[in-house]
Length: 126
Image (tube, rainbow, N blue to C red; front, top):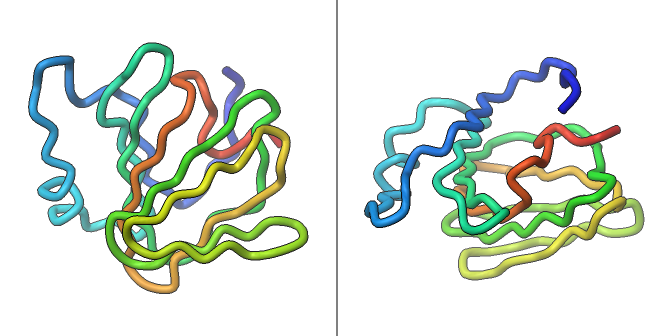
């Protein structure tokens, strides 16, 4: 994995929970004081589940070999694509396929779960 450009995001790639442990994503989100937070919760086979607490916008990027799944737990997530914007409310999810340039935005505090390959570089490949 190459060194990523530094962004004002709190990204934690360590796996916080092992199999057979209860994951309290709500407690983690409630305790979060960051505007843009990403914490790997657990690994499932070759994928990871991450908790995101978002407010503001991420930068435009893409992942050359990885798809990303976003699921909104609370708040409102906007996913900007080159030709449209997808708006997600709680209980809705969306897959951004590999090589698709995108950015995520949250007009106010939003909590999401993300599923992606464990080796993905969250800031993008380019």
